[in-house]
Length: 389
Image 1 (cartoon, rainbow, N blue to C red):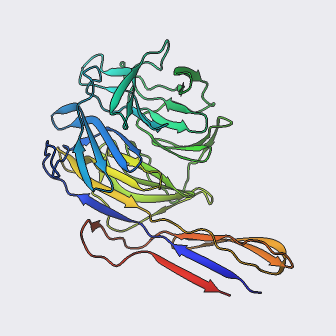
Image 2: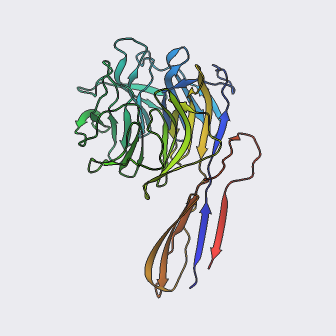
Image 3: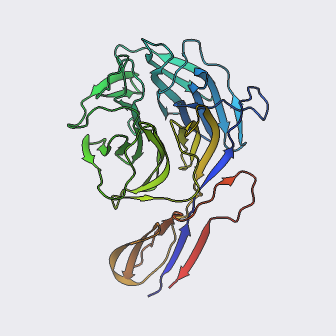
């Protein structure tokens, strides 16, 4: 048997882009936003945008852009006065626009908001949408999008009466209209949960952990009884390949700084040990198209002040294809799961047929991690192995 395989391994580390420090409100290269939590945060193109959030002196509506390539913050022109100070909004990036719904302001009574806005980064213009019906005032919702159908969804959250809601709403980009979507049975009501999507599945993590199939609107309970993270709110969650990553959060007075990966194919959790950012909750985060995570600040442990340290969790590009001309008989698929975070999927094509072989595998670093600061010299964490059998 003659078989050529290209294995590409990819490691990822937490990288600290800037440390916690005082804000600098100017248009120079040292511009830096203040510490905050629960801000609206988006990623579009090679930029990360942050609006508002709760700062040390109350909620705000200042607007910032981080240019990933330039590695610097830009203080943006203030949004329209109608776009009030807020935190806990629902947000999406869809069709080249940044979208924002609701949130809460500093009012002690009518603090929940129900306005819908979009921002066009190309023209730097904000637009407010007025619809006949909408989800009503709320904040702390779970939210996701369906790009193939141009839909934006939100679920639950809190209202002005601080009631925890249990409804699903969908915004249709094409018709610029909201509609109510019946939730699955036993979905319950909750707020401050985080979501991430893989294909047609949305994963929710908060006081419960479950998967929602957005095509069939069916719910799968993913509770575990062995090794898994504590239930919590206001954490950071994102997806990479078939895996889901979870960092930080809080429950009652306990603040977390643990880091976990959930293997969706094997249905099990694994804690990733090493040096992570300080424990925190309510961090402001967004994931780029390439899968890289950017996270700003949040409420840290043992501190009454909100931080503005800025982190990334970055994956390099992955080569996944190679071509061979084996002459074997029958087709086999072998899936090997090896401890210490190695997943290998090999498609073996066999004798007497001339076909293509695609082999790929990811190795994510499951042992001691380093926190790397921008500018420090480190040996690269990427390896490529060419194996000939």
